[in-house]
Image 1 (cartoon, one colour):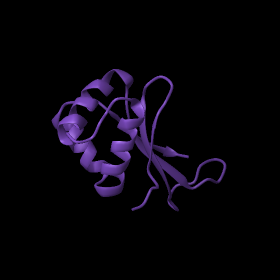
Image 2 (image 1 turned 30 degrees about the vertical axis):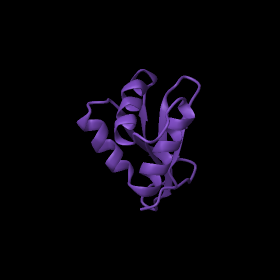
Image 3 (image 1 turned 120 degrees about the vertical axis):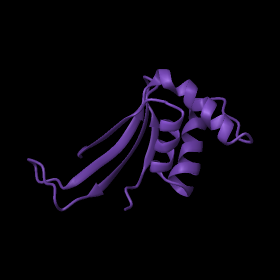
Image 4 (image 1 turned 90 degrees about the vertical axis):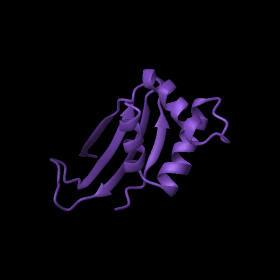
Length: 103
């Protein structure tokens, strides 16, 4: 199920991982049938996330927010899955919020 995942850290420091997928079972008030799925990690939890990524990928250099985006994009969205990332977040007890809504 391809959702064209994207990673973005906004100006507030919140990390968003999101993707859109057409779903013929859902149509909103305006006739749209795309559903956006994703998860977000709030800014004050980026430090534990950075520590986790440093431990998982010791050869990677994480010195800024763009490096966090790049590692998540390369390692989890291209090679593994968002579910794998969610499992790691659960194991490390790093809070995140999952969401899905009509885009």
